[in-house]
Image 1: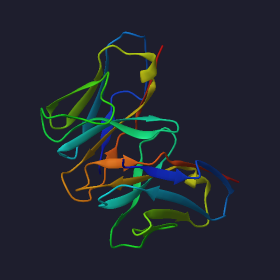
Image 2 (image 1 turned 30 degrees about the vertical axis):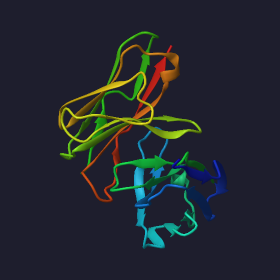
Image 3 (image 1 turned 180 degrees about the vertical axis):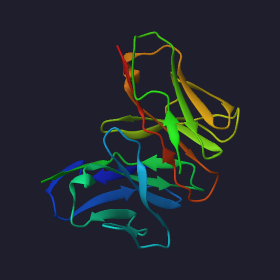
Image 4 (image 1 turned 90 degrees about the vertical axis):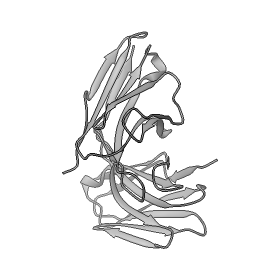
Length: 112
Length: 113
């Protein structure tokens, strides 16, 4: 069964600190992995996408990594800001991109 | 700019009522999706559509139906709402194939009393 597990479920950090969110998946065959950010009361918005051959992808202060051998991905947030408070969802696609398996998300709270 | 809109942000209905959730996208996308999002369970696919009048069941279609009469509009119908359908409902759309991003609407928080 295709599964995407995220950890931790929730995280509280101080503004300015770095943090790393984890995503482990068992989806096969693998096509691509996306990280989404979902602000409270909003729909998810894509941050990064990585295919099998990509190890790392950056979007500003967000850096995603992918290890396709161990089926793990991480999202690193540098110098956190209050606006980073949100849920972060890892989504893995197993074919051309239309069938997705969603992780349960990590809820991040950045405190001043 | 990409836009997916949903008819209501918040909705309160009574058990047994028929509920319509509307989703409209202005990007001429072929594929549209309905998800529900519950704490600890993540997003779960209810139904999706890859063309007008075409629909496919997702992972949890029971208790729901959909309608896609026009390309830009995808409706989710709860024939007889039940309390366990209280949830956040998210609509998304994407062009066909490849690694295309799913664009989500703002969500409808439905409460069934």
